[in-house]
Image (cartoon, rainbow, N blue to C red; front, side):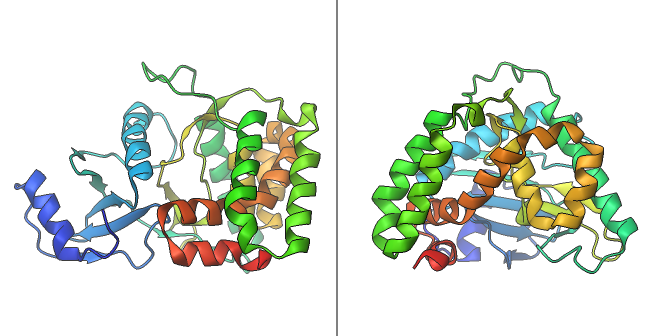
Length: 288
């Protein structure tokens, strides 16, 4: 679906598929997702519409994964009770809380930071411990060395033309050093969120308690270091406590450092794919 559509257009799609929903109020979310347009209906329902055909395909997988995860995790997650296949979109009861930011816990007390770290570590430990396979879903194993080699090729082809020469050299050296280290890519595959960052973790702005986790569009079987690297965006002080509650993840640190160094590039690459100019410019800015 085109991003130029209005909230009225999205409401028509919702009511066409689910005429029993009485729409009393509707608005586009102020912080649209990187991969989906987000509509808030009656201040109680969230509907997500994919920005591209690629995201539409991943949304179908996300719905199937979320169905398997219901009731198995210690924090609320989306329960897509509204699912449309033509056009593709999903809807679920809104979870309480606001998305955390990189500075959310910067001035919080040590007790609040420790509590948040314990909650996030507990959630990831539970998620990563879910036995495989996940129901009858046939999911590939992601984040293996060949996947990163393919991403490096895409970055060279699609992003290097936008980057200054010294930035291209730095990115090349970083990827080639990592790809040459065969030990770096040894991990036991787990169910992982895949985008466990600031946009997708909800907390109560008054109590600072973690309330839920959203957007499982990148969820699947892969490297637990992906989730560790993403949550690190909340700060070193939180991660100190995080590893106290999930010490097994200390062994991922070398891989986490590499993954963290690629996040802006990944954002730019995916935004370029989906025609998301704002997120592309944000991701590529430091390499211009």
